[in-house]
Amino acid sequence: MFPEEAEFVDRLGLFFELLGATRTMGRVYGWLLICEPPQQSLTELAEVLSVSKASISTVARQLLDGGMVERLPSSNRQHLYRVRPGGFTSVLETQLSLMRLGIEPAEFALSVLGEDRAEQRRRVEDFRDFCEFCTQAYGDQLMQMWNEYRKRKKP
Image (cartoon, rainbow, N blue to C red; front, side):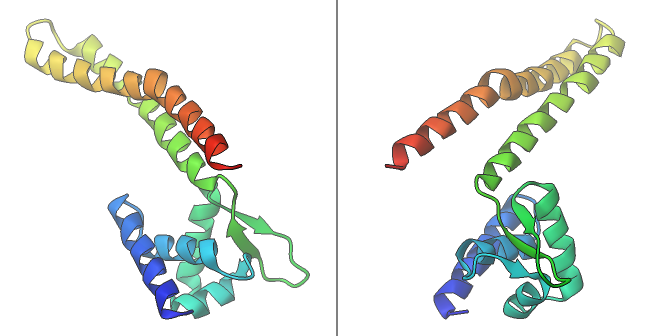
């Protein structure tokens, strides 16, 4: 790995940390974005990133489960991983769908909070409304806007 590539990989690791993921996850994803060939085994990833194979295996599974990478068939026993086209979009879709899950607990809280607890009800209503906004209005529009943006960017 060239020094500039290492800097990119490390910067993406820090970015992933800001998002609440691990630095190693960001570094693996970063390397898979720029490596040649575009598919890498766990052994190759561990070697180039100087991270244990066990850690790489855990991160690869998380990236696979998140839809950010895909596993490819291989002629030997080692699995190969590469970035799944549009994979980062699935992260946003997952986050938006998780926001939907916040609506039900908020509705429950509103059903048990008495009318005499107006301040608490207001806070819960704000939370519920935010979850609804993110998933109903904003979520669908954001994904549509992203798809339109990508079409404009690609000749």
